[in-house]
Structure formats: C-alpha cells, structure tokens
Image (tube, rainbow, N blue to C red; front, side):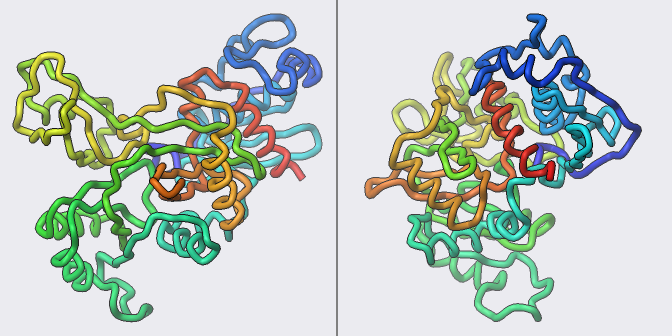
Length: 372
C-alpha cells in the first residue's frame, strides 16, 4: 500500500505514450539499465521526454509510466492526475493496475499475498516450513466476530498476557503497512492504552519481543535477491532549546497518520524522555519502526544480498509463494531471522538512490506477468 493513501479517487484519463521504439531505448539502457537518470536514444532524459509521469501522485504509477516509456509501451492513467488506477498496453495486449489501497504487483497471486498480509499467518507458515522467524503472539483487540473463532485470544486474554509479560514488547497490527501503529510498549498500562488506540482501526495485533539487532531488507524478485540494505533507525539532533517531543514532531511525517511512538536513547545508550531538552549537537536515536515512512533510512543500497540474508529471504518468499517480496530480517546471533514478508512493498528507496535501473527491472517483470 502506498503511504497515506486510503483508496482511489477516479477522474479522467491521462495518456502518456513513449515516442521511442523499445529497441532504441533498451539499447541505451543495456541489460541492467542505467544507474542514474534514464535517457532516450536522442540523449534526452526520459523524464524530459515524458514529463507527465512525474506529476502523478501514485509512486507506483510514476514507476510504471517510466518503465512503459523505456519499453515502448503506452501508459494511461484511468484516475486523472492521481494515477491510482492505470493501464499499460504493448500493442494488442492491455493490463490494468490498481495502486493506493490495492496492489499493482501481478507477479503475486491473491492466495500468497493474503498470507503475507496477515503477519501472524505468515509467521506460522514460515515456522511450519522451518524458516527462522521472530516469535510472537496474536490477539484480537475487539470482540467483533468473536462467535467465529475459538476462545483464548480475546482482548481480556491479551491483557492477561500483558500482565505477566517481560517488557519492552514490540506490537503491531496484523495487517497494517508503512510502520503504522508499530510501537515499542514498555508496561502493562501502556499495552492497554495501545490496544484501545489500535482497536479504532484494526481488529488484531501481533505482540513480539523487542529486539535490538541490525535490521535488513532483502528484495526478492523471481527467486533471486535483487537488492538489499541495512535499515537505519530515525534520529534527531538536539539544538539546546527544543524538547525531544518538539524535535520528533518536526520530522517529516504524514499528518493524517498516527505519530510513531519511539524509545529514545542518546549516544551512550541512556534513555531520553520526551520532555528532555537534548544538548546542542546531541544525536538521539529513535528506536521503534525503522520504515522509511517513519523516518528510517537506508544509507547504503547493495545489488544482491549477503549470502545468508539472501538464502533466508529467498526461502521465505518461496514458502509463502511470492515471486516479488520485500523480506525484513534481524541479524541475530544464530543467523538471520525473518521479521515479516511484504507482498506489496513500496520501492521509493530505489528512487532515493537513483536506481531507476532496478525500478525498471521490477516493473518489466511485472508487465511480463500482467500482459498475457
């Protein structure tokens, strides 16, 4: 799901058609494509040859439009300037894609994507197959539909679990994305508050131990590790005047989304409270979700992945049945451990690093799956 997008807003149609033959463009791209601004055979950047794709609000649509231009296909938004519904043609064949609240990845079938979307189901599938996965407990946070399930995982059971749990815990909704409501919880009282807040939007949560370990993402495409990066936690720098709360509030974020809840530490590992005023230049690391949408980063992006990370990520995607997946892993003492498997990942990190060649490789494979 694209960050901050509740659904689609259909409007008119916007046509974007490549003016160059696919052979002309792909000859300039080579087998892997360019690592910087893509160029057409006349030497002009494709962004300039087809500027309309930069104005679409849907990132998926922008990437699809760019790749369509590189392949000599036609692209048409069926959702006006937003682009959350769009069409690609290679001549006689046509494929329609939905982004926003939907998934545009034709490479993944609905069965596999449904398993991946439910974090508890996905973890159980991996565990049954012998893939190392972070342990956790699933609980419902609402009594709705309780007549359709066995007892033992109801809200009262979650509170009983919280009363005897070892803290901190890491909690997240079963089906949320972009790190929304993924929080470090430090007490039974905080857990009860978390349940109340999450129940307004979700029906169940996954409760896991809080792990402090290097976190990696491996992007798997058709059975191979295409690229990977180690995630960096968000951080703020003190100015000697502002409270930590104010510094966090100043970070870029979606105003409509709930604010991430972090556990803050200084360079020496000491806790920093929201009301504290960090000294000038002090770097405060914000432990919690490391997602890009929560302020996390990826300083270095690598082609492929380290062999142990690649093996685990490829196995996880294969077991779930995904041809395209972003697999998040902790680097634990006894080897890589899967945190979760994403069947509908955003790839804006590639744009951050100028890797339009990898964006095009992903979308060419997706076109091949859809144009049948």
